[in-house]
Length: 238
Image (cartoon, rainbow, N blue to C red; front, side, top):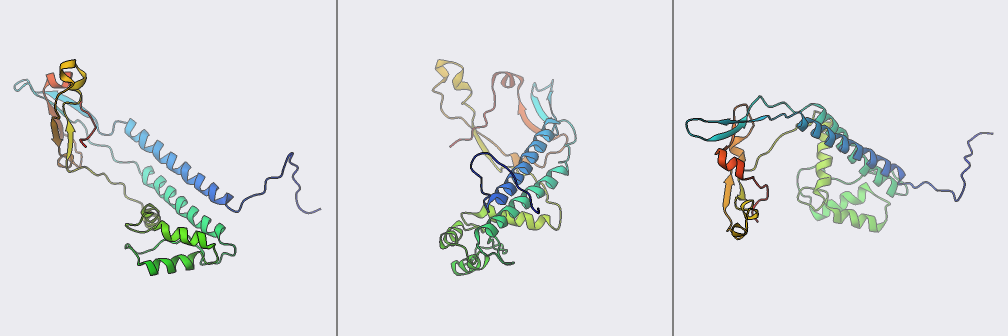
């Protein structure tokens, strides 16, 4: 007897040709969860330690970076590379499963160029990548627009990151806003009835002027009184 018979109570569950797609996507999600956990663990090490200093002559209190900022661990770009590669592979798994008779050319259509293709070029790419797929699927892929400035641009970004990661480690970078405006009166409105109708008090800060973060950089100058009686809201003005 060659082969293996499995006994199962109840109705038999037929495997779907898309099962491998879901498995691959599940693995990608695991990589994303691992990446999030790694980033949280990094922040828990207090990589940008902030200290508060009082100036006895001016009475001002200043918050500043008290130690050399810790570098981002190499595990972050490594896990990120695993995540984007597995995501990108799951797209091709889907294309291979969706085409009844896939060939070596079967793949999830994503333009390689860093530009928006013409409608004619995009339709031609879709027709070639999933030749033999249903008309509804081809139309859906054409409408998906996984290219720069398209509605599915995030798919192109995953494709691009995967291509980069094949040749070199993905670089993790930081960004800072040029300008943030907050309503400084927001926390004061909660103190008493007579403060609840305070008008908007715009407070602007320029994070980019304090970036990149370095040891000794001043964050916010505050008086001891204001530090005790107010809190900073992270809700920007609308």
